[in-house]
Amino acid sequence: MTQTAPSPAHPVQQRYADPATEIPAQWNPVLEVLHAHKSVRRYLSDPVSPETIRLLVSSYVGFVDAALAAQNAVVAAESLGLGTVYIGALRNDPEAVAAELNLPDHVFAVFGLVVGHPDPAEGTKVKPRLPQTAVLHHETYDLSAQREPVAEYEQRIGEIYTDQGLPFSWTERTLARLASAASLNGRHRLRESLAARGFQLR
Ligand SMILES: Cc1cc2nc3c(=O)[nH]c(=O)nc-3n(C[C@H](O)[C@H](O)[C@H](O)COP(=O)(O)O)c2cc1C
Image (tube, rainbow, N blue to C red; front, side, top):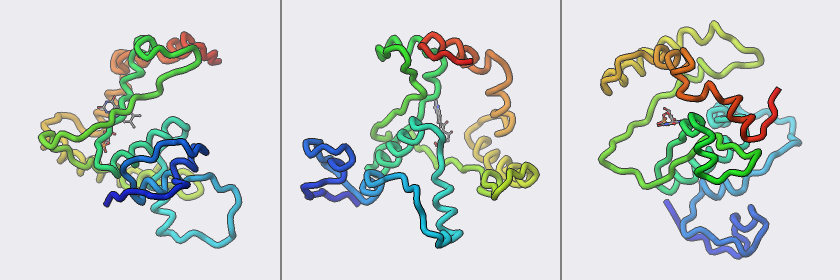
């Protein structure tokens, strides 16, 4: 699927507004779209088809720029056959991470992102997501509509957990992660850690 891009005004150079920017050795249509992204703030009144909305909504992955940038990096990396994993565990000990990365004040590592060539021996599988009926709401938030699809998801993911020898259900695992300060693995100090980095939170 990859192809070499020959153009003089390459999308990467346009993206960074710099003709000296190095053109990647590999290129494909996904990277083309990612590099062409621009916020659109004026729209026609023509409705977007429900099918297209489903596609757009399924790609909403975060609300902060770091998450958006990282997710685009994930799509770009995976389009090139690379593997990725987010590392939220960086927030377990932000001071140590800041020291390791030599971060100046007012800079905080939100998460890490590992990028590399997947080891075929690992045999990772696609992990099912909560169904759209559980997470997609129209106009108003509908808690009751979530119950059934979440219960079905619990059943589906439970089979995968059983295959993997994991003892707890998805709900139990999710709750356990937030149960106590100890289960937050250091993240209960997040406000303190941010203050130490120079973020004056109120
Ligand atoms: C913000 C964030 C932080 C994460 N932190 C970690 C982490 O510290 N360690 C890890 O192994 N996976 C981490 N993950 C990966 C999730 O466990 C993974 O995305 C989730 O289980 C879904 O699996 P999938 O990405 O294979 O579909 C993180 C994911 C996100 C979005």
